[in-house]
Length: 117
Ligand code: FAD
Image 1: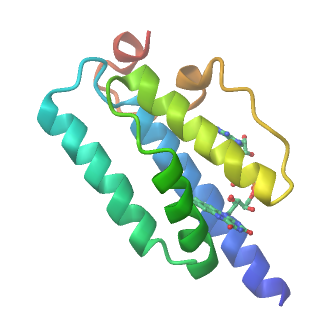
Image 2: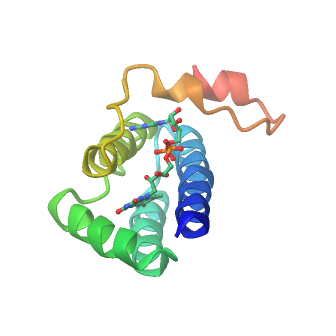
């Protein structure tokens, strides 16, 4: 149905925005605890994402490409590549990941500019 498709797409857009913004704010030099948190977050996220078909597929992607948590750059590039895998599957254009960090500001007003450069 049309409604279903629209809602699935809206949920997808909002979720991707949140995930990319979270990666753009992940520490440049994460502690072991930061790294574990991101890893666990992504694994739980993929189990609980409320689109069954999407979650099953994303789970398989995570098995093949485990979350990269060693730095902000690694995490944001990894998620960009995962989003591109999904883009491929749903026949969306492939996105250029080269300047991903500047594309997802959070408006947090807490030294974001310094953090992102
Ligand atoms: P979206 O893919 O939602 O992207 C939003 C915006 O992000 C784009 O307009 C672009 O500016 C930017 N962007 C695009 N690619 C990237 C990238 N690689 N890195 C950073 N930014 C980028 N839909 C299905 O039909 N089947 C599925 O199996 C499916 N699996 C999904 C799994 C997950 C984890 C998520 C979050 C969503 C999934 N979706 C799935 C939804 C789908 O990915 C889209 O969100 C939805 O189709 C809306 O697409 P869109 O064209 O608005 O752009």
